[in-house]
Image 1 (spheres, helix red, strand yellow):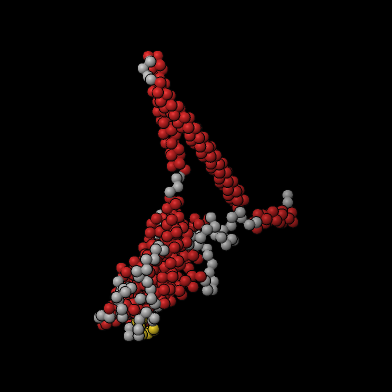
Image 2: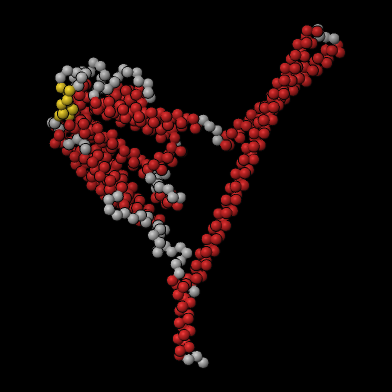
Length: 430
């Protein structure tokens, strides 16, 4: 029978044996580590809220952009000042709403990122982006500046020329196009909560650049043509604004009051043709065309690269071409061999019956020799094509075996993970 001191000693030893197990850090402790696995339903809910705020921002941006374009037309032709003032007030109110939406959108985005385990403190990159958005929104036509103008001199015309203040502020629409592009990328297949989760597994960032790269990989022509169309319309619009002071005085040459002429100048410049029928005469116009030159070269060069890459055959297409080539060469060998046999038979028959003259016999001999040389060359091509096909098959078989080995390694890794989880479960339940 155990005494009281013996019982206490046994209890103390048992507690000492359990302490290492209890104090030992688990194999995959989610609570103690900062890299806790996210709850997909929670993060997806925050992401959907972020998308809804972005779509709301997109709607007001679309309204403000459309009204600004209408205002520019009224300013350009100096018509209906009362209606123009009303539109400017509507733009002002919509811009205030957009600023509030930009702040709320940024807060919702931060909450989404925090639900995924990201930690933010102080002034972050998202805050800088929000401030840039607010500055672009604020730099829009205002009703307080409707009657203000800026005068300057130009070497191409006599006298002073001027910009309207709201006319210059209309140039900020070129930056607002970035908001439209951002919303388009945000609602694409390659930018979602799931995409962000998968990218985090492979130490990548599911940002807008990743979305653009993915679209360029899967839809290269669509992305490039869209970039070209945006370049033409947006910078044609900007060029028309920049050259408007001179068009008010002289439209006999370089008439940029026509939107078609502005777009034509952008097309000619971006493709490096440079006909010279339309050219800029203001400082702002030359700055815009300098940007067009840089972006145009980038877009055109990208198109050349895309066309070159698309002209290459894939592995399966290359197999098909090689097989068709082998079949074509085989058929050509049969035809050439048949011609040689036919000519040889005719020569043998004519030699026995003396039906050919010496010149005809010589011509047939030369013809048979010609087909024999062609058959030899065709046979070499066929052997080379067959050898190339065999090399491709060897390479493919090597890739297949490597793929099988990787699959087996992955299965072994999964089995080891399950074994570790079972071991942890048994230890926790003791």
